Image (cartoon, rainbow, N blue to C red; front, side, top):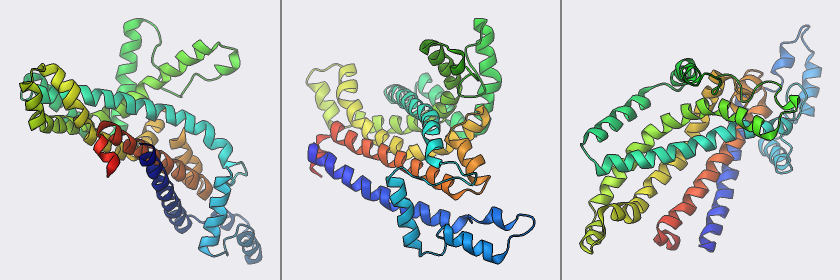
Length: 330
């Protein structure tokens, strides 16, 4: 298991290096760091633009520019924004804001997909299976921004009216100024939780809908396998056979789908943050990055996204070996 993990870590490093090269190439071809300079009034002179290009290294060969950027990233230097602030100083807090939403959404979506997928397979063509199938296809068909708006408009108000107090929030990742008021850790934690519920549900339910279909299909294949019939013939109860022997093997396809779906979750988080006005990675990309034409911001966002995707694929590879020891020898 140790050497299997080492091999996967080493291969993930090479994948991340290739991703960083691709990210830099795309951004270098799409963004002009001097775009703001060119449209200034009065127009800058050609000599000034040439000196700025030289100072920014835009005249250097492509791989030289890539190496300078990558060596800075390794040291924690992601460059500066068009406003002169350090990208690294802004990325840290925004990663925590978006990260807690995405990680919690993955946990909720996986748990729901496991339960619903197993129930749908075990009770195939029963009313519960048809109900979960209808719900899954309905959620799959809903656009992310529309579903988030529905939760924001109706669910928050309904829950708050039901309990007679404000439990769910629809704007921001925490109440403005709560940290500056001297509130205790429990108050701050519950406030952030109230802001976290709806955005997390928005991401989790849409992901769970697709993942539950994969889990149901994988479970149906497992239930019809020979080793499941053998376990039943040896006297194991049906429930024990399903949960102890069937579910473990049926989780392997779900693990693959979840690992591949992390990138989709990042895309969904960009839209969700716009709806719920979160100051996370999504708003940072759209407003400070693409909106301002800031190449360093976009590079930082894309690299962080690539790290998350590679990291979750590494975790998936390790989980494969845990679920099926034969994979360690592959």
